[in-house]
Image (cartoon, rainbow over all chains, first blue to last red; front, side, top):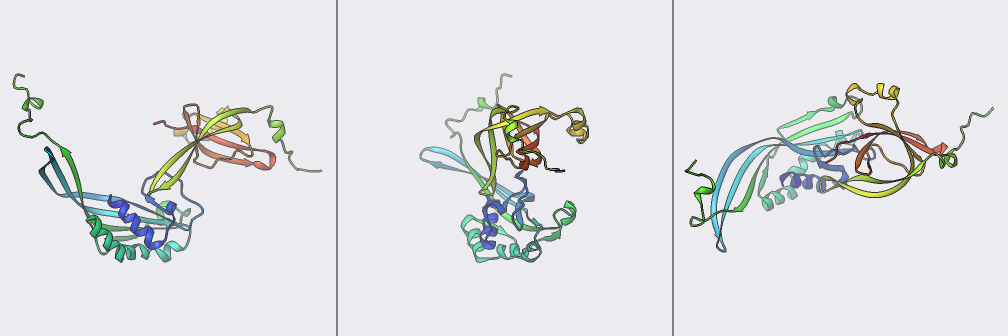
Length: 165
Length: 114
């Protein structure tokens, strides 16, 4: 899953602990003993294209539906430490690191080279968490699902349509 | 004149009951929250909120099942911890730490159940 790959890239590049980076909206308490925390989530996505193909494997008919998705992924970095100010750029650097390029090749997705937005959103938390930035990246990835389907001699129209009614 | 409050942990033994609870702790594993449930026996007293205590809650929260939980000082929970009494799930919403006097007071409310 692309969010997992992006989180892995950031975690490795910034040497983060396991509980310092997680998916957005995981309903966990904000840690109080860390310098900062990072969350990763989808901002918006759209389907660029869909393809449906059929293959026969070991006498079983399978269909493969591929969805080519594009959109934006956001990375939130927040905390009370000034590290948020000084280390936020490491997220952009992580996305352009060699490890990121290798992971994109290995798992077949693409991260836009530069963030589409880089916003200070500390205002939404008032003064409790003064440092907070949201960085948004364009992404493109493929989602593919394979499922067994009926072959032409086993396909029954009556399963879907009853002409007597 | 001394203003020190007494250490009343021993006196609480006659007031409290032994309760088996399930304590849920959260950890981040592979960027997701994973909840772990452990059985724990505590000495505690459960009491419903008084009307006055309910009135100071935000209006939308007054119909929640609020309770006060007094436990021995060694049975400490954290804010947002989830505990089960039987099959009923409660969440820790407030902590008053009186550990120097032998007990801790929690505000708990019944949470949604899956």
